Image 1 (cartoon, rainbow, N blue to C red):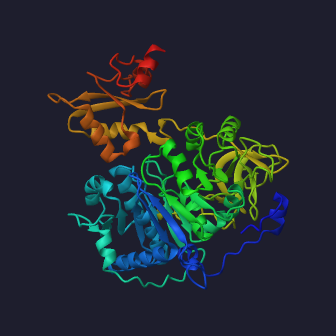
Image 2: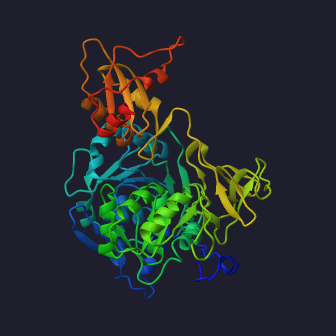
Image 3: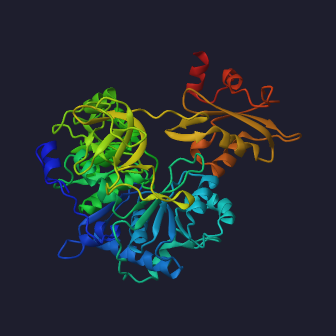
Length: 547
């Protein structure tokens, strides 16, 4: 949408929104690249598996496969307005699912693979999903969750053979027609229901329209160095099952006809640098938590990308300097909450970087600090960061009982984040305050009481207490039922299936009883103060003990 401006002021002055009256996201990012004289045989997707195998797919091939999947879902009774969940790693199956669902007029409900049965049941049950397209790795979790999901009529698994409770995706695609006309939708037609990527609590789903990706393009194009440029190949190590990865890289790249690299598997900084070099990645979006690990691995020579963007959490000055030394270029930022998409951005060379400010409002958008009544406060004063209510990237509301406008006051959509705007219109969001009883494990929010309840549900456990350690891991204390001898590995597997990998306690210690206050509550400070055992399983635990 940007016209290669020379300055930020020129970008704002010349910007115009160009979202048509009839707009289907799938048609925009795929079919449009194959019709009207466009070269549909350009590469749209590059997939490198963990064993090093590489496959390439054109926009034309993705369109035909998405048509087949749309026909498979239609034959299974999925209609416009229905919700279809998907839990897939980055790759071909995720790509065609993301294209097929909105082209039917259905709503995609992305679900991270790492979630356990309890958060999975909440997301699928709350959204009323009638179908699920899943990776085979999810089958053990789904076996527990399926009986609790009466609305889930169809499960397609990305495999070659049917299972006892699921249909194989690829044989079904082989039998389907590759002709399917995308539904004519309006920009405001719902297309996605997003839930938080962690498993904490029972949050409402956030509904985004077909226009949501286009609404964030000005900020993304700015932060990605006036994206696209000739020869760009785009990659993010982030999970495609979250709004940030989809709206900040995958879908914008396809909108511009740029190939996207997919590398399923756990993120490894060394492998990431090799991927950048082997595939000529020039446009890179890094979640804030992965900037430092990749920068540390970049001490050896590697092919540097043209542009690196990050967000939504702002980066510190120290991290900016570390990244500049490692990559030789600045890491630009695009900030915004899930409700609004990316709404502010910076671009080194076009504007001054002022960490930890993530920049100024993107062209075409107005972002202010307002009071609780929606009145803008003066520059330098603390308020609630808000985006103009008519911004195309804004969500439609929350799913279910909480549906409707999300925190709108007067002419503003409130982000729920506190901060200020300075005299030069830079935004300064304040860090989020961690909730009581919530810990961060590998960047994921976890509720300690939910993990305790899951442990206490185990047949061999009478009670459980949980604390978080300084190194970001969890320590559980469990009381066995009379005559039971619980195995720690069995307890970890129990939590993994029901809550997810991030919520598995690293240390599980059997105790005779939990320390209780007069009112019967657990004395967590007492548990936290207990010394670690000498036979700690990891070097960092032994180091903490000596400290």
